[in-house]
Length: 418
Picture 1 (cartoon, helix red, strand yellow):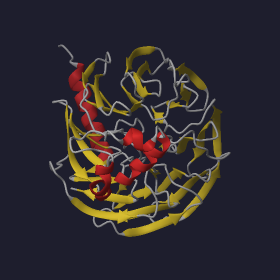
Picture 2 (cartoon, rainbow, N blue to C red):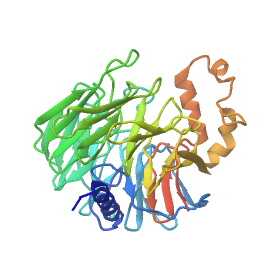
Picture 3 (cartoon, rainbow, N blue to C red):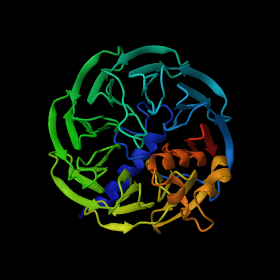
Picture 4 (cartoon, one colour):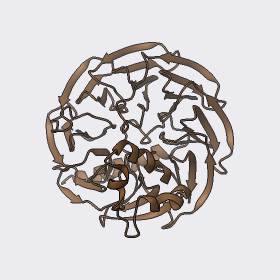
């Protein structure tokens, strides 16, 4: 009897989606699971969803919401972590920290964990928001204006893994807050760790992708190629892993696929003139959000062949949440897009209120960047990207729960749309 691995993959993907949707599941986090695949089997999302509720914080939102039981849990740059009622958006509890929260929580066994700009890893009760413990790193720092996120923890067998602006990768006992080990890199580590059964994989701003054993010993590391203006090939975002492969993007304009066992190369896809962003997986396709090319990629996962690259208006810095054959993501223009993976097309499905008010300042009536921006900003790209935030830019990865999409925006609001 012939064994078709495609059917095996579909079954595994379906099973992982079902597990990720279980409200009692432990370890829910950025990308839903420790492999960061960010996939569910299906969702009944309307073609033009409308606002179900909106909750306003007092700071910009870069972290991604996690839905756990009856709560939507998300941090804000106003220094608060919020637990909101997922039905109506009202506060259940909030916790005040000593800095901005740009990290997405990981949840396990009644506790949640997140990193803060005050240099602490926090552990709080999921039910009450009461602090259980904190762990102090050697402090956070920021690479540049486009270093939007802190590392989002992941957890396995009671150990919390995360990266830090102090150039280290950490493993912390989730119950006690005690250090299990830390591993030094040559740069800021704001990528989020991706786990397999026995490995921790994470990239650094030093341009290396690290694969560590669960005891903190180096198994292998891989150096990105680098590029004229970004010679280190900095790795800013998290990877995904599936089968024998690990996939990630870098600032050297490349998407990499490596053998998860030894770090040898499977393929490299080069995107001229643009940082490559965050991968997700949809069946046999790797979906990669992009920066300066204003697009989203669909690559064949075995060979890295480009299958589709539909355009969007502006940069995307979060991962696409995949539901069946559709992927949902937000962009700097404050719009949520749906990517039909099978057809290779995108369409806008929701616009933040800030985008409705201010998008015309940056985008013309044909959906192109205004021709006068270069003159207006005199090539001050830092000021331009700061002003983009007036559109309610969407940095968070969207959480899909049945018919509802949850996300945060730079206008400080947490949105639930359906």
